[in-house]
Length: 306
Image 1 (cartoon, rainbow, N blue to C red):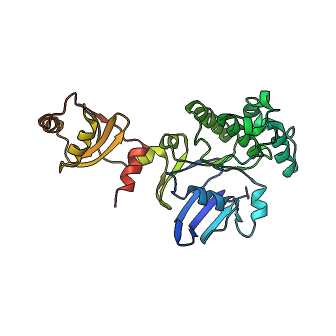
Image 2 (cartoon, rainbow, N blue to C red; image 1 turned 90 degrees about the horizontal axis):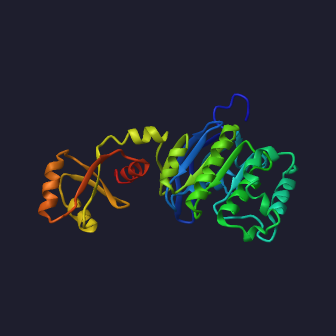
Image 3 (cartoon, one colour; image 1 turned 180 degrees about the vertical axis):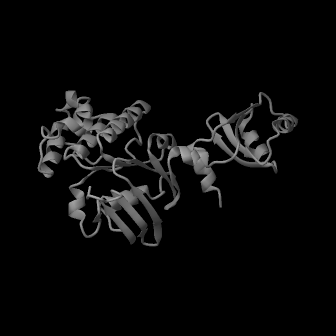
């Protein structure tokens, strides 16, 4: 990082269009050195376009992006030597072995596996027993670990991961985030995108993004605190009818399915009246409990705030 530089990544007024489609609409955010920053949103939100611009793989239509003080257009070669990038799709050589892939990427950056082994050791020891196996024959979780090793082998200051846990099992997701936390503790700045709202809680700060626009940027705790309304979890014997009945009540604000429950916000706090109304509508086994909002609740509120 350049001495005295406040932000290691700075995105200012970023726009990206594909023909007539505006994928990114004036996005601005900063990432500080050593931060684990999350870009959280569904497919099509613009996450990959933003990351491809930050990693110098694509030009912006408008706006300015700098990485460690270097412009992504004018100084792209300098930036590429300073970042590790793990794209959304597995992009390593399927017909090379685990060890051959890792050696290849080390050579590209003028280093060796041995020189930076301490950085990848905790990850590599999990796949080392399969070092002679072709990358294309690895499981999803093993491919993920190999891709992370290859992104780290040149000891970058910044690690950029585009939806690294999409399509892998819950255990692999948990292990991967544990690895990211350990890398952060070593001083590596990490930018990660994900459609999984629960992963937002593992980041220092997050940007909630939808259709190319950032709706909120803050710590997960402050975003949840800003929800500012009481919320209830409801269920009954007929969840589909319950959704319709609740949405037809004037004093009910929002109703969203979450697993076996509905998350509901209301203009009023009279639960006895609500229970009475649902009973009149022949709902049985009604359960109502007050709950704390989560990141997904906040995302849904922001998305429907217009």
